[in-house]
Length: 334
Length: 107
Image 1 (cartoon, rainbow over the protein chains, first blue to last red):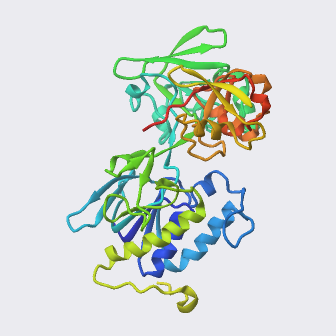
Image 2 (cartoon, rainbow over the protein chains, first blue to last red):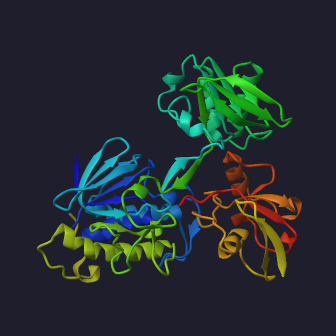
Image 3 (cartoon, rainbow over the protein chains, first blue to last red):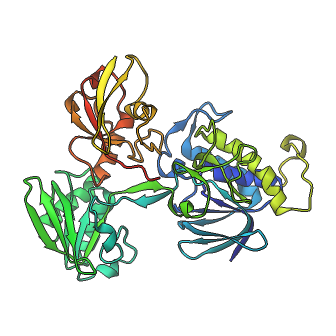
């Protein structure tokens, strides 16, 4: 079990800066992020894009801002759990919290700061009304153990890099691989696209272009998939597994189940200290909402500073907080 | 005035009018017109919550950007007339167009 003062959910710019503000007040932080790297959107989506509204930086690349934030918080030795999603939040009798991740990591903390930005990235579902019934029963949105697919009949849907790469990889392992793509051509890496076409010619991949999934069926588990081409002709394919790879879309995820007051997928907070309706749980950055909210990194930084002041009372209930400037006192690491 | 039509998820079609010379994307206009668009990413072509199907006027619209094409290519419910409203700058080119909303907002 990991023990910390503040568990920060989300290692984007605001979550990272919260470590600094907490550190100045001698509070230790542990960060959890569903992505495998720190930086959130800045690392995952636009690392090479310049940001123009960080005070003191006329222009800074997103990944440089993440690098700088990391350097700024290093003296406070934050710890990280990356590539795991926080699933459960439980308040214990003494007012502290226990968080559980998707990989069953348990984190015990006195304060929770949700800095989850857009939410967590989840796979997009194809538009098949009954697909939910087959999830885990033949339909799988990610490949954890390729051995599952040995000697099976697999249908992969999608046209991006992951659809191409997995089709190539599984063509050696599975009994039959069918790749279904909506378009005539692929926008993924040209090398992978060429390889797929080559394997299709050799008969190792059954390539269905300009085609869509239109139905799935099976008794208790997936048995067959209907694919409809441009000519509206429907073909039924026997399949053990369907792997839809249509990219990721940000969703609020399990946070929605924690009893927090929400407004349109954002967490309602007060503007005194960005506290939620659960004492000891704060929400900062793009994930929160309040009258006048602006989704700006700089607003998230401000929210982190104010949050830390109130978090202090939960971490050190018997101490009085006296505000100190870093220019006077420096940054006292621990 | 620039005038185009919007079909919501219930199939109701309404005319939306915006002044010429306005510096907004179609996503911003739809949101301001109270359509249920999450626009989670704020207009960077990365969440596709502003996905629309262009029923009328597809060929008159401003060209696709690369990030827009990349994103649309990954959508399971995209059609050959799909666009991301956040990547369409509102101009006279939208006159007479009909946009059909494609994404439901999860409450």
